[in-house]
Amino acid sequence: MTLLSSSKSSMSQRTSAAIANTLAGRRTGPFSAFLFAGPAVIASIAYMDPGNFATNIQAGAKYGYALLWVVLAANLIAMLFQALSAKLGIVTGRNLAELCREEFPKPLVWVMWVVSEIAAMATDLAEFLGGAIGLSLIFGWPLMDGMIVTAVVTYGILLFERHGFRPMELIIGALVALIGLCYLVEMFIAPVRWGEAALGLVTPQMPDAEALMISVGIIGATVMPHAVYLHSGLTQNRASPRSNAERRILVRFSNREVVLALALAGMVNMAMVIMASSAFHIGHSEVAEIETAYHTLTPLLGAAAAAVFLVSLIASGISSSVVGTMAGQMIMQGFVGFHIPIWLRRLITMAPAFAVVAAGVDTTYALVMSQVILSISLPVPMIALVLFTRRRDLMGEFANRRLTDFAAIAGATAVLSLNFILLAITFGVPIPYLDA
Image 1: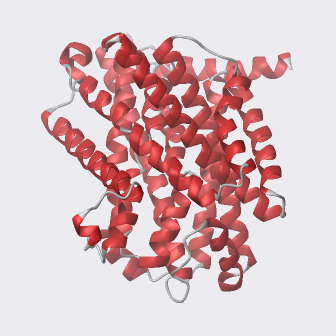
Image 2: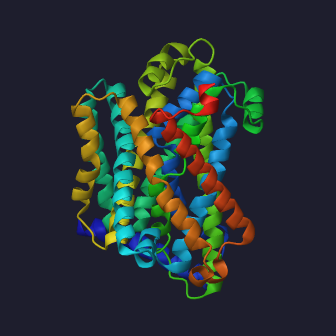
Image 3: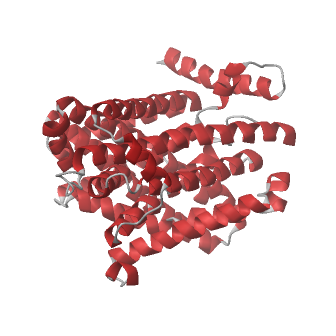
């Protein structure tokens, strides 16, 4: 155990030393870019978690390729906010939650912390249920057994965090690659109409009121609160820039990684919609649930397609549950300044999921309600991030330029407006277009 700990620890230390040498100009070469990869890969898991599976399946089954442009738009907004979060951590050396504690009044900080903790639990509910549903379907287990196995596996992965940042980045990166590979395989199995898919990607359209509701669900749940908090923390301790020149290099590499990692997450989401469209749109447009999609895929595309779908769901559930727990720990430490053992953090965040299953609550309904809770909590990190990254006294020369500032404000306004519509729909508030 000591040897393993030493090996894992030295892996992170070697990476930090190599990054420092690259920043100082003592190390060059095409492979140097890989040293800076990791934070955005971990954050990207939030954009292909099980909460996205049901929404994307419903979009593809009901409307074919027509809503692919919504997925693209949501992904572009996500790229912007994850890049801003990473920049905040690099430039200030503090994460978003820590800055909120330092800059805002104490009563407001406590409210923000409570809201963020509830959001972390809601996030973990969706992710934890996704992994459990996948395991129960592929092995024929009761859902509770799938929950227990998911809990054990995620806790086992979380133990690697004590050995430094690099082992966790490699583990999550491998799971991201597995999810991407699964959907690459699905694209070869499903009878995709690529011309229609390309048209749906670049042609904004809204077929009817229900399509608007689904679109609100896609965009409203894309920019995840915990991912915004987490990314700023993941970049703050990997390297210690000694000058603005070195910070510029780190920000440049970070922006490239954000584009690549979030582009992969976006393609996975698009692949979900494309697969659902190819398999279900003609003759099975009523498919809207993960379990129904699995059982319908087997006779339509074969057992291999259904199995690959479940493997991707399990990988998504486990990896996103791990990342959700990491984010929850960072949120607590940043807002209130104390740290709890990882096993206790894991127990707290997974308790609601066990309670939902034990109470016999419909899992799809639970997933929908978790997204509603996220919609309520999303303004907290989005608004704080926009406020901090535009302040020159805090960011110096790295403060948002006018175009970036405009894009961030416009993106935040669009996402928060759509979240308001989602909440109005959920609680029965009349919306003129939807009620027409």
